[in-house]
Length: 164
Image 1 (cartoon, rainbow, N blue to C red):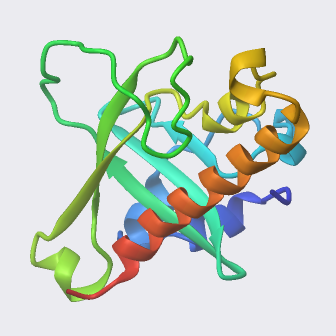
Image 2 (image 1 turned 180 degrees about the vertical axis):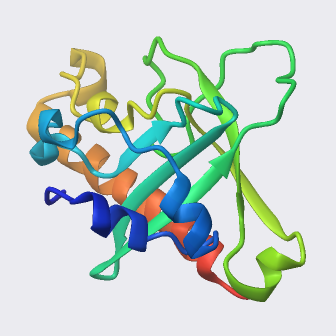
């Protein structure tokens, strides 16, 4: 992912108003991020922990999504993230729901998916594969994981953008 500025991030949001985008809290320090190792930028709102944000590139366009997680999570169960699909991840996955863009979203239409609670998908797909996972091609497996993460996260963003 290319390094992003605050302005680029704020103007990328497609499922909230410009006013909401101008008020959201950004990650603490954008200059500390390892952009070359990120497939998307995701973070939890420091002021409102039930809100989160994701920014990714879809068809050469920067797309920002506001997400929310249910106030009361069901009893904590281990679940696999639908984006990175890492069965060995030790972190949790949470249900995140995004309001759809446009009129559908204004009418209350949403879409949800399980995503790593702390948005660690980029790290998970780059982890060294076990011998059983990789066979004779560990570098190839990591590349396929990265491509899969990008495809699945972009599919979700496209679904948010899609009018129903």
